[in-house]
Image (tube, helix red, strand yellow):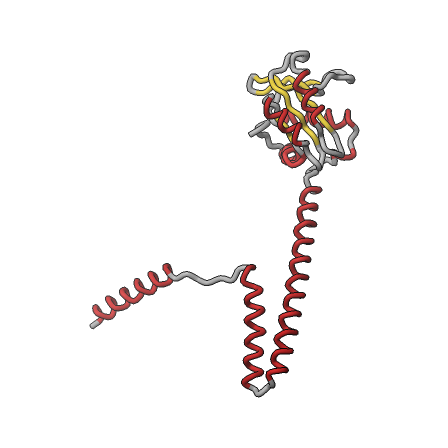
Length: 225
């Protein structure tokens, strides 16, 4: 008798586990919320009809309920959109990470970037003359000599920054060009296209923030992907 009990218990457990594993739980998404609100209003009207309310009263309540639901949903979408925009803006401004590069002068920014490059495994890091011709920093990593222009900028970094870095490679005997900026606006489309066609690496604010976090934490990493 005990044998059959154990066998039945094992069979019951196995079937229950299979059922729980294959069962799909229904979850409501954001797109279902309007239908849920409408369904709730309809259920309220049905309950009022059962309680003996007049058709005119039910229609008024249904219209008012749908109107209020639409206003609440529109207000919710507006608040959600504002929240997402504010969150994105806060995340964008939080890409300072460590030293506040936005308050540095141009020369201070160059010296700070040179220290960051050293922390990322670059050797022979040196700053060019004060009145450079498109390259602010020269650095070497894995046999490649980089001509780097730094742009401590508040607007959109345009085509000229990339052009200067690319054309100055021969003067400074560099292999590849790189432009580094702290600008929130990033690079213009022509600048990106010119950089891509000349194998120039563009480091924007987001990537620079990661470098600075690694620098503050004593970590190293690659110069580009």
